[in-house]
Amino acid sequence: MRLATFASLLLTAAACQSTQAPTELGFVSLGRGTQSGITTPGVRVASDSNAWKVLWAEHARLQLPQPPAPQVDFARYRAAIVIAGQRTSGGYSISVEAVRPRDGKLTVHAFESVPASGTAQSQALTCPFEIVLVPAGTEPLELLVRY
Image 1 (tube, rainbow, N blue to C red):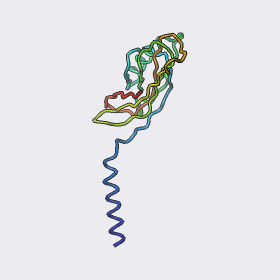
Image 2: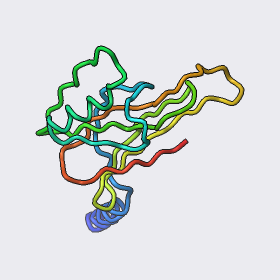
Image 3: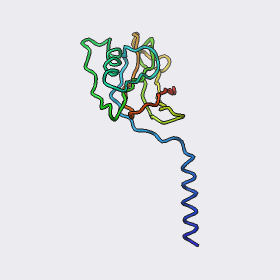
Image 4: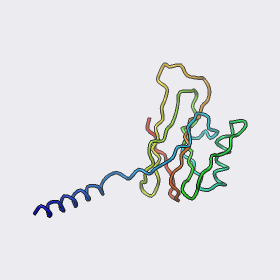
């Protein structure tokens, strides 16, 4: 009797697990900053070294001398730059919180921090970004930002 009850509990637990939210995938952050040369909000992806060189050149175009692109193992990862878009002052940042599969895509969940009202901020154009490595694959990436 106890064995049947235990087996029933295991089956119930397994059924409950199948309805949980999608599993988070691991990602690696290569860094964040406020001066991307890409000013349009969104996520840009490179799946091979040639595409990464082009994307990096666009991203780092404001830096002189331009730093070399970080090394990426494209057999394991894709490089993604998450961009908040151009802002009219300092005090903004964006950070990736999770990467989850959803409807045949990888959704990059990010949080954008905005400066508190009435606080002193630098009066310069900024473009917050974070560069992350996500698992290699062909699924498109989409960005979901919370504020």
